[in-house]
Structure formats: structure tokens, C-alpha cells
Image (cartoon, rainbow, N blue to C red; front, side, top):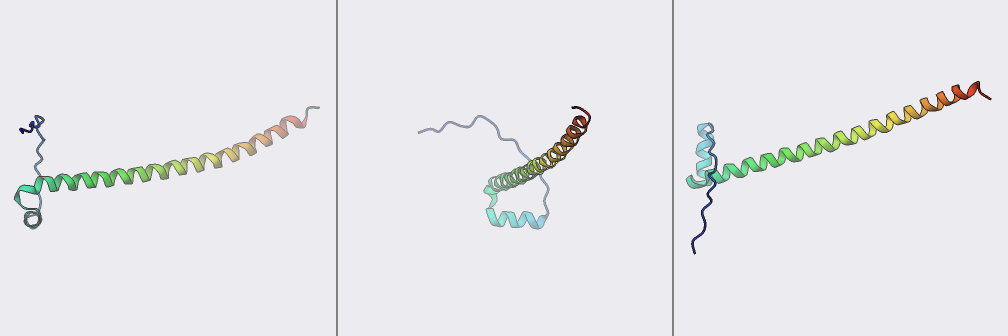
Length: 91
């Protein structure tokens, strides 16, 4: 059975790393598996960034809700004061 080839070419990326890190990388993953290893490492880091962004977004939303609640209490008190002032002279 002949498998269809992926006609979409993968982009290439040239990076510079320290010689020590390069040697360790070659020892750990071998010559033919560097691209796959780097791709997985990048994907993991991007996923971590996404999780951090989600966490920061949730924290911001919670702070925003708390601020709205606090502000609404202040506005309610101001409304009560205005209601008393307006009703004070009218009978």
C-alpha cells in the first residue's frame, strides 16, 4: 500500500544555540530526531503560554467583576442620597 505524501512543505527555522547545548541535544535525541524534539518543545512552551494567558484573563475578569460590584454599591448609596434630597422638599 502506497501512502499519499503530504504535499504541504514544512517551513524551516534556523536557530543558533550554544555548542554545549547542541552537543547535549544530539546525544539525547540523535541526529534524525532533532526537528521533532524541537517542534514538541516549542508546542509545549506555547501551550504553557496559553495556560498562563488563560489564568491571567480569568484573574482579570474576577477583578473586573469585583470592581463592578464595589462601584455598584457606591452608586446605589448615591442614588439613595439623591432620592432623599429630591423627596425632602416635596409633599
